[in-house]
Image 1: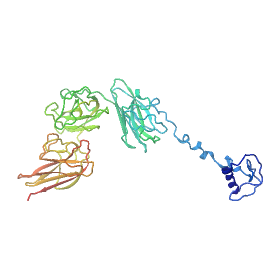
Image 2 (image 1 turned 120 degrees about the vertical axis):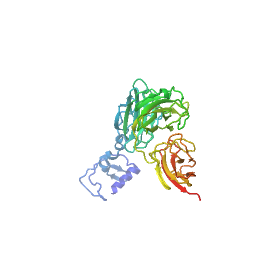
Image 3 (image 1 turned 30 degrees about the vertical axis):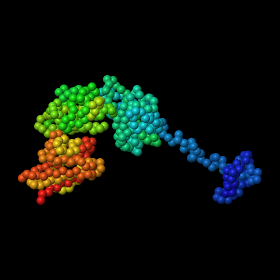
Image 4 (image 1 turned 90 degrees about the horizontal axis):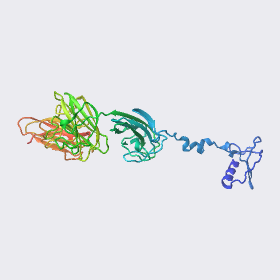
Length: 494
């Protein structure tokens, strides 16, 4: 292919001079490596070089050697393959939606909203939905990606949904792709309020992606909470909105009580015999972290005693109480806070259900009887039944109770340690099984770390065998439990 080689030399090195029309009948390029004379081809648009003669140029015409649609910019520039723009890219063009679930995508959206006080995950493309929230309703909006897209959710009031960095009233970007991220807002006003839900992402390089969006509106009837136990608002099962703003701090420290430094309000509910009460407390203000305690008939008495209590930092509080008696019992739920200056709005939910079968070792009614040996057990799925008491150790979390018979003149040694670095168990001994606060322990140990051995001992100096109750617990009220190694030995002194 000599002519082809000469042509490229011409174009790349010499520039090929001036172009002119020329009729050429004598030859053309061959197809496979030589110059094949042909008399049936008219070749046009040749170049004339002073010293090289004429060189055929027909195959360099665009239609003869390239396919523009296959590689030219119009075929690969972003405008040709990017998804079309979305219609709900800003608050001004937000899509109106109501309660329900929808499948959507942020592909094709721009990054209109970045930063903003109280917002999270705002670096990528975003789309906006408008929701009208009736007075006294709780808005719950949650989102999750449906492939490898990890969206975030931000809620913004109508009045501030302008500019590029609006302040958010609720936000969540805590989950991974496929996890639900939920944000909530309670309309405590007397008229409907329009709230904008912005689906965004924390990845600046993201092009957006498909997601599932769920909107729920819950009517929250106000319940009049009492300032004190004597005037507590008596409620039925359901969800209510309330606030500690304007209340005073009536209830302080007490046995088994926690988070008692702030203003408090009280609700009462009647729990039938043989039924379980579950109380769930949620803050509706990110700056308010409430605590929750359950108190029995001695609600206003002294010394104060709580049946159950929880003050987990920045988390939902959930407490359960089983009425194992033969009569209906009135239980009081006290909403409080750790700091004296802390007050704010919340939602509180009361549920009454059948008492489920307890796992072995859940309560004093079904302690797990064991023999000497080494066991690997777990506290996952257990409740916090055993509270504070003299010589008891690490009592704030979920717990499990065992019982062993100690013969006369024998020493009981029991030890426990966590099987991983994220679970730190404690251990205590009781001669009688008492739950809640006011229990009496004869030994307790929570001195070691998660995988460090905690050990307790007790010697039966009597003449008869003695049942001893061993409670494995944890100091952390936020712990859901974990796996532990548990060893029990009985030794007769020489």
